[in-house]
Length: 188
Image (cartoon, rainbow, N blue to C red; front, side):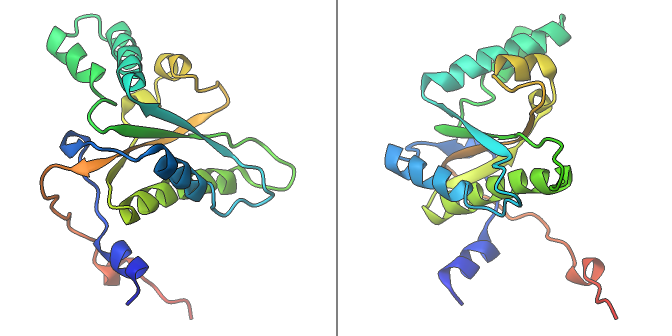
């Protein structure tokens, strides 16, 4: 079995609350983003882009998220707002993957959206291969227009996910995996 197969068989997500530093170095981040961009892309449209949240920018983004939450929940407690402020602050690095899928004469929208998902998964696997733990999440703010506007996501774009990258501070339990007999059929 190759190292890649062993990694894929053992890969699991780590909750952001369990992620700490150190995060990727600048050269590791460059490599991770280059690998994330190396996905199937019918028509070479590059229907995704990356937004890097690191250092103080994670807290600034948290303020944006907390403001959007408060605007939609005027009775939110200080504790709730504090929780929202920390959404992107647990892991030392969060990469937002933004889908830029758009109508095209030859390339279906669905294929472009799948390419954005593939970019997310390449980023997760590459970070895991470098020894980091990850979590691919969306959460409510990935669908909230006010939050997306404030985070710089255009009206014609969607959040494919926020990839939290760090080092797990505790063992991460595996989840129950699907019964293969229940999900695999053979065409005949």
